Image (tube, rainbow, N blue to C red):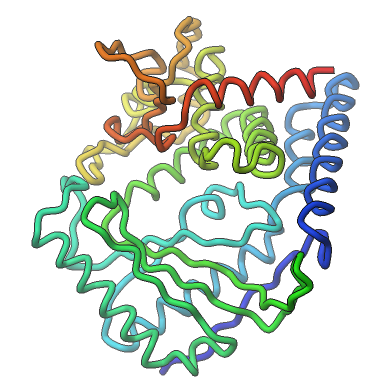
Length: 357
């Protein structure tokens, strides 16, 4: 039986303001946050306490994370009750504990029994593409058939599926009963987006990795939060760099300082009796903090271009004007989406000059 979704709570920051006023407040708040962190550093406050301070200030509270997990479980129950056997797993920002208070989107991997990913690459032969399309059609049909019951405040369903897309998505924009006045003085319903994918399980491995690295070193999580916040609230459209790409840039910096290890090192320490492959990429790695820190090689790498798997530059024989940061497991995937190097470096230098004092 399909039951109505319990829509999770929202945190509305700066409601009923124009976009210009809202942006000014975000800049002011970011400057105050940087000043507070600098003060704590001068006072010799521990990195763990600074991480806790930033987490409390910026991140989605645990009860609200549980609400989102419960809603995803309801979606899974609805699909399974209608004969679509699956397991829904949250990954991304919520999965690794880096979801901001005012950003509630949910990334969901749909594990379907008849699709295997152990050694299946992200390539679309005709039968693969049709298989994904059919899965999306089945889920969409169930959601549409039970739309009035399942989504009490309406839903907008999009199928983002093209043959050149690396990760096709079924996107649900689920509306709530909460209204907000936008910058045009129009009343709009608040909504939460759920992006469902059935072909790429690498997001689960990436989420496990980032979550582990945040536990491994508190400074890493603190810097990731500040850089992601800066990119989202200050730089905004000037650099179209994803939060995940920004996280990997911070990771590479920490690798160069020999604070965090290369991913290859974590994989070599894995105690798994059998190697785990996801979409042809090996994704099992050691998550025992004692073992990782005990054997960690502290030789400093002098390279300055990101190849996170070995924490070094990969020589290339062609010029490029785009940033190249490759996924730590899938070393054919540039996660920056071809961001221009000059533009990104200029923004980082401007950001450094603005906040260094």
